[in-house]
Image (cartoon, rainbow, N blue to C red; front, side, top):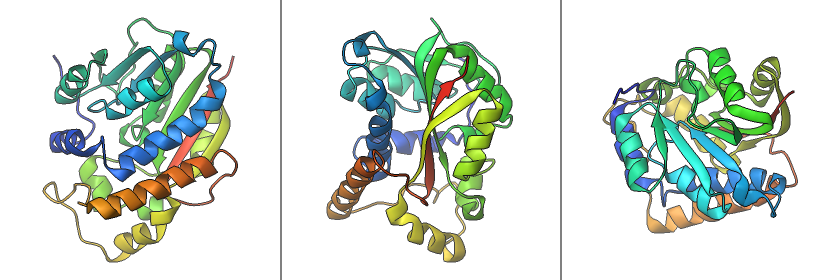
Length: 253
């Protein structure tokens, strides 16, 4: 099995340990469900087909499959360890070089997700062409990216990020590549001041220190409450700042 890593291998191992309970990973799941659920018709959701590109160790895909009751899903990643961990969760997976054009098994899909993937990709246009070619006509594309280039730090460098995005930049890139933005918002507004502080005065990260900070059970539970509140809010409003950008777009005809 060929491996094409877009981030360090150790990070996949850390991801596998924490993603089922850690507030940041769960917050992305809450927000994704909030954006997707209104567009899934109850009588056909079981027939929906979803592909998660850059699926990592499968925590996001497993949760989306279960909570939205989507039966036909596939995860795609470039790391062998990630694919194996996803398979252990009972997920159908495919390995692919995410930096190059590829086709997903049994395409097209009604929904494609790419959560914190685009920032790792050298050529955005090739990646978005891959998304479009694997989506059904007017299929939905859910994408999450880190926010604001002024927050770019050693954390990003160690993890293999090429860039960060504003909501306007992401909107322009998607429109240029034949997608129509339906909804877009910033996420994790409640930790934005801490992120700015960390960027200005925080440490230089290395491969050994570039892992998600440990939290107490109380702090993790408190942040989960805030994440759920934010996921509820984005049903009604567009949050004007945060550390991530979440966008739901539709493939144009």
